[in-house]
Image 1 (cartoon, rainbow, N blue to C red):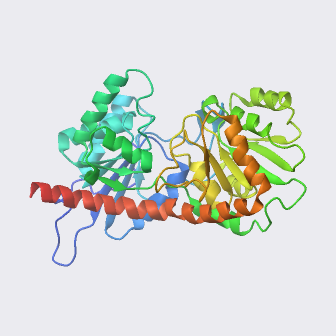
Image 2 (cartoon, rainbow, N blue to C red):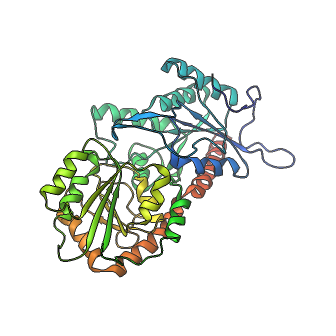
Image 3 (tube, one colour):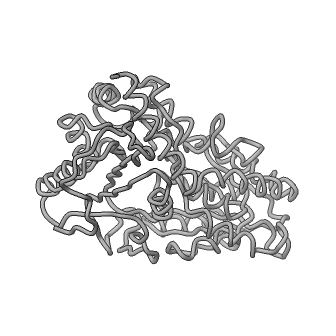
Length: 409
């Protein structure tokens, strides 16, 4: 068994509302995830340092190298994902062994609140099983939205499962407007939904913005348009290429596609077929440490997904100072969310390349609009960084404990 932190296995703990003579006891939060992710590292470090919080992070599995099906390549992130916060993970055994390990860890640690990431993964199912047996408070956390929740096979069965889950859970941390509506749609009372954040590590992108030091469209390349992500059908890169083919040829603009995947050959062929291959470059895969400088080099970043949740590159691009254009099939816009149309970014109707082209044409013709969106977007992105994650997760855990305590007291 891989055990990297002593969680105080034999210590029994009172409820999280209990107080010592001197001060309230820290709320003990357990986070359970499938695997480490680069955008959570700094957020977990800050949550571990949050006053009045004791944190344990449990991973279902670890892998220094893994094969990403969408990227169609072996990936090893070039940043440290595990330093600065307490974590543990099981050895590489069967799913049953992992389940026993995780439930055993939670039983020994006896956290006040378990934060369950998602609801369909093996790790999430293990947490839900533990909650059913132990009655430990459980908060749901994820990026599923009401628009996307009914997709896939067996929608009726899915609906029943989700409604049951909403009754079992003690609450949820919403990660956006549409995510909050997902919880409500399946029966969770709004008073049990606390505001949360699906964070990006915004600091390196903000630093890249600070050293960028050039004006929008300030050279022969004109407006620099960028895309960063996997080259798969759901990401809609072909729609972006078709939109670019509708842009005026007598004005200076360029498109750089950062990423890799099964559509690479198809997309390069499409750019040639559309007659824009002289304006489009395919950068290929970029690792974590390369992304801040790349995104800061763009004036505009487009997220043309046909189906997507919390697209983290949206936050990263905004933090890097780029104006952002997103499709309405993403879940980063809406009242009070990351992208407010015309204020912190632009939104267009997914599936309509002409609509995307109109938004891009606006930006080509109005450098001041690009600058305004870049500035307001960077300010907005600051609310979706690791500091906000640490603060909202800690406050939600405390509120969950207090709410349950009042309802049972």
